[in-house]
Length: 346
Image (cartoon, rainbow, N blue to C red; front, side):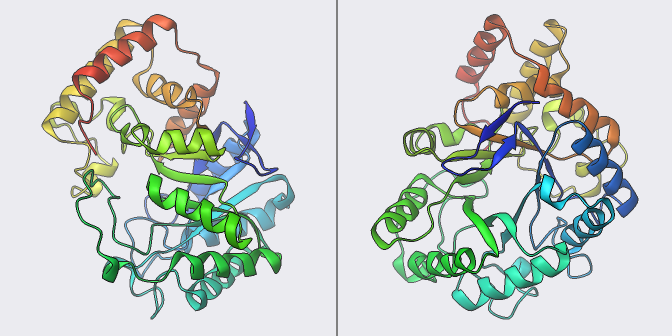
């Protein structure tokens, strides 16, 4: 396993990290512990979770992913060997049940971290992330941004970052990060940090995969020039890049069989691009999932590649991708496919 300092922090994170949004719904606690044990034994040290997990969000399960990790860490006695990342939920009807004042205001952030720390059974988290912006902007699959509407901006970023500073000063949080954020939002946070002495974000957790390279247009330059690292989520596009959904197949127990509304990567262009990438992998005698992950692993702006798996055999294969280096020829063919299907799925 390779390791890298995350942004301008002193967090030495593994190239592959373990996402936990299936813990408590798709995965039982016993299965989650098995995944955690295997991942850590194979060099993974970054665990990523969120107060709203598991996904899909549901009052019946909310917070269970954090609680499972907390019980596992207590049983293993390994908190100090791990880099623990969680997120505070942004505003939205889908998760309004979590708190009456759901969003990124000062009171909400303080309440959220205390509840997360209790579930995780720890005094601090290494990385605390804003799950999505307070303002309305182009995230969750929206490419275009046509009109700035200040009346929908919600809580000011200055208030949010000031609240995060209070958490850092209190020792509850070591570093802060963003998620589902844009180039403008990232730069604005960096500007406020510099001008007001507020915490400097060290990472942005956004979707990135062979099917969704939209962040390369603007955000990649910000990441590289400002030394802020990407935590890539959905590197397999909900498992689509494995090829298992081609031809309308829905394997029993798979994410799209359980949650058929997750259609983001099943556009006509997305399926055509997926077929091309899967064919390339097989022609090169590569596993399609490992090729897709190895591509993400190779990007210079990557801090860590967040993998998630519902089955242990998937986890084994995904972690093994850390040892795969793609040839110049395969990389060139990936770019050729990308030129044909540049943004098949936002």
